[in-house]
Structure formats: structure tokens, C-alpha cells
Length: 255
Ligand code: SAH
Image 1 (spheres, protein in one colour):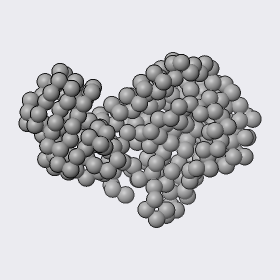
Image 2: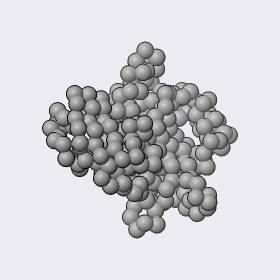
Image 3: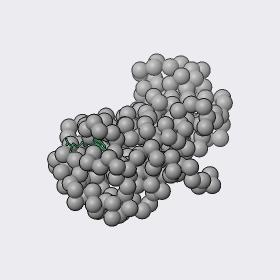
Image 4: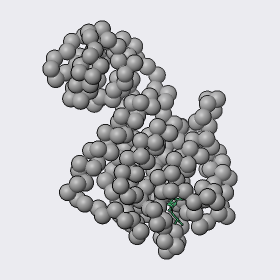
């Protein structure tokens, strides 16, 4: 069954309305008929099986057939802070990070970030990233679409470290701290129902400078190794995120 995230204001008590690209996709790509069933989510607190009742050129109306439980979201909220990589690697990070379970993406610039940050293209680029996150979340049957913010500066990223329970700096020049021990210790702690939030910061193709690593540590980030192999920038986030999902018991067994 095709899934769509729709704005919460289009999610009524007994029916939903789909519009824009979603309405186009349903009518022109899926060639759906009245009665066709879909799954809609408002990306916050409701997800339901709906059956199409009425279609116009711009909209598709559907009645709610069955409210669904929202169990696809990880218990731990992982924010992926990615130093802007070259070309369209950021789109790969967003797509794969969404599939694996990231809650938020924070692009940022650091000393060795090569990509020139172009304000003019910024809006279009952010729209494209958000579309990728939405489509990846629909495909992954997630209940929420990860948040995507505009690129932050290095100083802003350092400050974000104090907004999370655990801030990690993936640093390939540091192998003493055990990522596993760190996660086990961190995730063992109870937060009384509040989700645990972890931020993982990934450097650009050229990596973080030693000064940046020191500055981040000063700001409360823990430098962690992802192993003795040097990963490409676009690989690192997926590896770190998968390790956190594993450590948080998000891979089956319901624990
Ligand atoms: N400076 C590296 C390349 C950086 S890789 C080189 O010598 O070629 C890009 C980013 O991925 C790094 O900044 C780091 O955040 C992450 N990364 C890659 N491999 C890693 C590893 N083994 N441990 C921790 N982080 C790693």
C-alpha cells in the first residue's frame, strides 16, 4: 500500500485530504480509483489506512478506515551533523540516514569543507533535501520525516552539543575511546520515557583539523573511532548511525 506524509491540518477526525505532488502521484502515476487504499501519516502522532472517496484535479479525499499504531520510530533520537560533502553525497547521507532511523540532519561547514555555500541555491537545495527525506521516510515506512535544517557554522555546531544527551565527534585519528562501551554506558541510563538524543558529527572529505577536534572536545563532544579503516565521509554517518541503532536494541527483539 502506497504511503504518504500529509500536513496535520489535512488529517481530519474521519477523513484526510491529499494535494499537490501526492494527489498527482495518486491519480497520474498510480491511476488510483475511488476505494483504493493508501496509508497516510501526519508525521507527528497519527497514521491510518484510508480509502479514496473523491478525486478532483488538485485533491484526493479519503475516509479513514483504520488508525495504525506508530511503532516505527527508534527509541533513541540520532541527529546526524554532516560537514557539507562535495557533489550530491549529502543526498545519499539523507536518504540512507532516513532509512536507518535518523531523527534530524544538520549540515554544517568546517575548516576543510570544500563545497562553497551558495545562499542563492540554498532554498532550492533545502527543498530537494526535504523531498528526499520525505520519500525515504515513506519508503522506509517511518512514522516521522527527519528534520532538515539549513547549514550551520562550526561555532553553531559546537553549541548544539549542549542540546543533546551525548555529542560524538567521529574522528579517525583517535582510537582509544571504545564507541561500544560509550554507547552501552550512555544508553543504560534511564531518561524516564524521554527519548535519548545523540548527535554524531562527521567531517568533510578532508576530515576535521586537530584544532577542531580539540575545540569540539572542549565543547563536550566525545571523539569516537569507527574502526581502523578510513571511511568516506558519506559512509561514516551510516556506520555510526547503524552502530547506535544496534546498541539501542533497535534491530529486532523489541528490546
Ligand atoms: N582525513 C581522512 C578522511 C576523512 S573521512 C583521511 O585521512 O583521508 C571524513 C570523515 O569521516 C572524518 O572527518 C570522520 O568524521 C569520519 N571518519 C572516517 N573514518 C573514520 C574512522 N575510522 N573513525 C572515526 N571517524 C571516521
